Length: 324
Ligand SMILES: C[S@@+](CC[C@H](N)C(=O)[O-])C[C@H]1O[C@@H](n2cnc3c(N)ncnc32)[C@H](O)[C@@H]1O
Image (cartoon, rainbow, N blue to C red; front, side):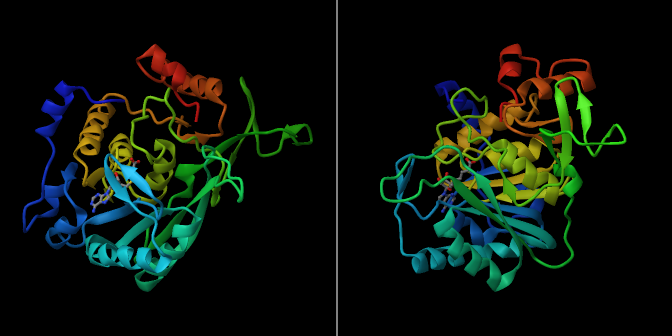
């Protein structure tokens, strides 16, 4: 997805900046084009159910002309503390938090989270993209740290079951043991674990793909939103980038709050949000379950069987749908 000059003109009218003394109702379903540090003093308290954090990684990286440099772990930890602790005010006592990071940033994330929250888990997901290295192992995984404000929190594993192909179908007295035979093969629904090997990083032919250098897959964010928020709940992402969290929250019937310092990324997020009003599909999530990679045909069949029509109105998009 790219921006045309007409998009820029139309969408810039819907971009917001937060005024002092804001109420939660001023924030819901808005994309704020602002520096998080400028916004922090004005944020209302206790209104967010799920906080998803994807700050710039501790890597040299350029975001549309704004460069972030690799820093010593202690400096990155201090930088995280400088915004994370004031931001925590927005969380309800029942809220959950997810923080993305690579192996190096995980050291800082653990340190900052354990100061104020209860760390529940660390998810690792397989990130297929990535360059090989001559003097080190290729980086092919990332972490997502899961924490909660208190012991009273919402978690729904049933909403994030994984549908896997059964390679050695075992029968007891002639009957399938915990799997079903379907038109496209034999499948089992498995409980979600903290290792995700079913994620595909957005690539050029996927409708969700933008020019953002570190865009997260919608499928990945959908797992966080479905497991840790309820319909109508408030999901906040203060480093919104191309808008993935907001788009997924909207598609899944949650409210969102997004903050992003870069104007182009804000506009991309708004364009994706406009498209998501009519196309609520999430690649790799069909018929209420998450699917392994390379099960496109089965997912289309499952969606078509349920609704009696293809998963999207656009046949070209249907073909691309759910490759993740
Ligand atoms: C790792 S990316 C987030 C990508 C996002 N999850 C997505 O799927 O597109 C981090 C984003 O934070 C933004 N950013 C960096 N510093 C910021 C600040 N002080 N306030 C708000 N946004 C900031 C960057 O412009 C970048 O788009």
